[in-house]
Length: 313
Image (cartoon, rainbow, N blue to C red; front, side):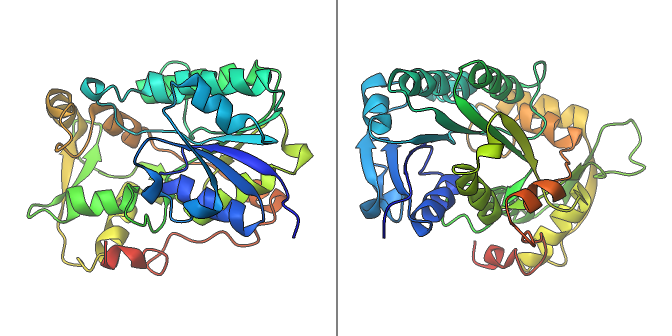
């Protein structure tokens, strides 16, 4: 069979990246992936890809990744900074993207797809600001861009970092009650902020379909499934993890944020101040029309069946 297209993927070794690479290969595309030295084993099907070794601040490695391709997917993202290890939102969400865009322009590779996030904005957390700045830079680049903004992405992480498995580990496996965060002075309705979980397989399908859909050029799409409250989400995760008896307790956001601010530079602390801020903002969207456009008849639902992977996680 002929190869449909050669595609450079940045951020291919993470949770979503692995699904995007598998979807590319299953659709007969050839992924060219930039991986940090020693990360080959993080991509299960690396033998079927063209692997270039280097960091996202190495312009020569980026050039080698984009050199022979017809499209670029930028999927590098982190949910927490660790500045002492040079892991920052600015470096990975923005500066890395700028390097890739400049090389794509230089090599005349026009098609460029960016993984952003639902709820990004000019004035927000560092995560939201750097993602927004990245979107703006891409929109002004003159390339044929498409931007995706997913809500909460879930699915079997295959040993990578994923929201539901992290939540199970950090909050539900501990011997004390799980927090139902609330913003007000009184906990009348804790944990009532909402999200629109979307399955990672559907996200990967949409990314790959967009590569050859001309009508998606210069468009931004929000991606999310049915809306659930935080309370419903953590209860569902608890049951799926075999922890039906889990207790929940109202937790005021203000003191939790103060504690997180003190400790979030340590990776053992389960949540950062920024993550709490974004969590209680909520994160919902209606993507019905977008699923129709990309030919996804029935997005995978967020339910006990689709969360079965949590039993072994």
